[in-house]
Image (cartoon, rainbow, N blue to C red; front, side, top):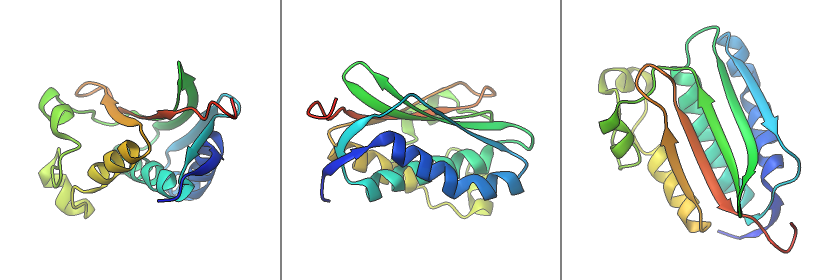
Length: 157
């Protein structure tokens, strides 16, 4: 992994653009909420992989007519990407285990959707390799919000 100067807002915009057609085909509104430049030192391809994993999951579980929002924002000394959906959400046990290898929150639906239960594990490893973190919030029946936070590139801030 090669860490170089970049902008997390740019990663967010590219990810949304890449998934827009799929969202439209599923009658889901894919929204981008960005708050200016978010300088990072990172591997843009790996960070896009994280965003692609999060968007793939959000679009897989979001109901027709709902919205998926990608927010690019600053939180203290960190810059973050947050993917929020209006899907079924996660119960407490799933929230605690969702980043474990091969864990699938809904095993009956996972077989149909083709997931192996590795995307979030890989995303967590990428976040940690960047000195960051990934976490999930939300409750069962109320959607989910996955947030990737990385140290801001203070030289560029």
